[in-house]
Amino acid sequence: MKKIGLTTTVPIEIWMAGGYLPVDLNNIFVTSANYQKYIELAERDGFPKSICAWIKGLYGVCVDEDIKDIVGVIGGDCSNTKALVDLLEYKGINIFEFSYPYTRQKEDIKKEMDKIMKQLKVSAKEVEKIRIQLNEVRSIANELDVMTYKQDKLTGFENHLILVNCSDFEGDVQEYKKYLLNKKDEAAKREKIQSSIRLGYIGVPPMTADLYDYTETLDSRVVYNEVQREFAFPRHILAKDIYEQYLDYTYPYDSKFRIEEIKKQIEIRKLDGLIHYTQAFCHRAIDDIIIKANLDIPVINIEGDQQNSLDARTKLRLEAFIDMLKDMKEQ
Ligand code: SF4
Image 1 (tube, rainbow, N blue to C red):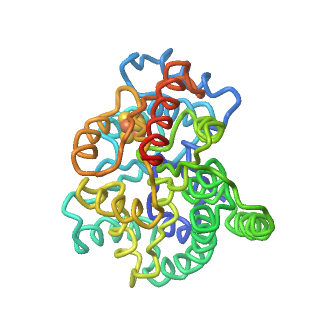
Image 2 (cartoon, helix red, strand yellow):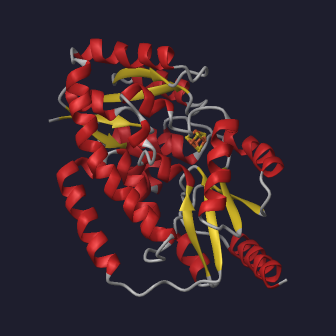
Image 3 (cartoon, rainbow, N blue to C red):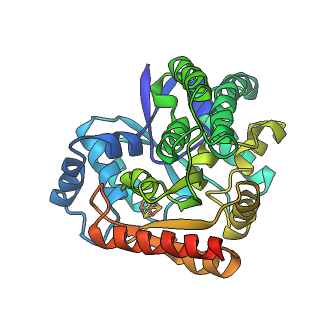
């Protein structure tokens, strides 16, 4: 099957109906033991220091892994993607341009999706069939998410991994479904995880995934992974069709819509504080201003760059933040 590289979550149902196998380039980059080689490859080809590590990593993966086709999301995701896509096209990679409309109107997202369906010569009916199959698997991922915060059965890192991989189901939907079902059975038999402080993680998935284990050494646990959860479409049951499903996906639209959902989850999951992760040189760091102004619980902003583990200063800041949450809770 021909691979289609993804730079972010997109309606993969359409490409799958067209015979493509979606591969999330972010996951290849961040899980590689030698992830720095992708960044170095981009910098050798001329990427400046002041461009985010994810963009360089995505470029490096495309070139090094000989990816021939990618979906370039030029609206609603990342302001750097347009330039990345231009460069990759110049390098001979075939680009499917897709945009999440700023308006968040059904007719606008329909236009975008129908354009791709036409390009791939697939019908809405074929796409819908795949959407139903994928939503079955997404439902299991969402059940595991509920087991994380309601039954305290999963760690923050497990929750992150299960949800983030719903962007491409690790390249094999049926195998991923089996993995999730086994995980569900195994987790149900576990003892509850005890931790005094319940944290939420918001923002792009981290380069520094060790933050989950680190917070757990401090008697706290992440029980909400905002963007990763959106990758698993937790409200898909409410969508009548693929257009509505991808309209009800908070990440690519305005922050008001996103913050409403975060507020709901703060209540439901009884969160004590939030970690807002931003990436160095990312425009999304500006969101921190709106987030802090609109949320009523303590928020710490931590920034990652090219390293895939927390530095000493960030560890110290997290420790002080969690100590403060404990003091607040005791009071
Ligand atoms: S972290 Fe920000 S700049 Fe980097 S790829 Fe993601 S959205 Fe773009």
